[in-house]
Image (cartoon, rainbow, N blue to C red):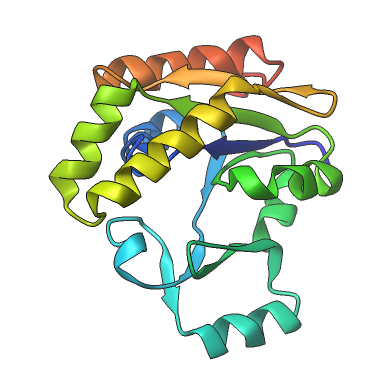
Length: 190
């Protein structure tokens, strides 16, 4: 594969969906595709630009080999459509909204994968989670705790996880993402 998979991770509320949407056109200008996830929909996934399917439909698609990557988290099934392999084979880079818990499996399938962890200051994250109103106070504290544990270990295997702070202005985060891609051996193919 000539293209490279950019594997974006981060806690719920870190702004992954906002970043992906804001970066879509600048990425497209760099000949980088954005892969849309397939999700068994629930309140947890509201707001993401994803393809909603029932659990039965998801299982059917997984059995047919429709996913390049798939996993379960928070009671949902997630899949990255297999079409990303064609984009990668065509030399296009691809950004996907990945799972921290599935990173090792993704790295096995895509050895040149660039893992990017979207971070956010705890108080900013807490405020975002409170504002959206989907989690209880206990759920929010559990998410903050899990985030701290993962953020403390910024490497997995031989691959260094690149950090990208999203505590401030989204335009700055987009610019920093593009800069990160430039210095991480993902060439600007314009």
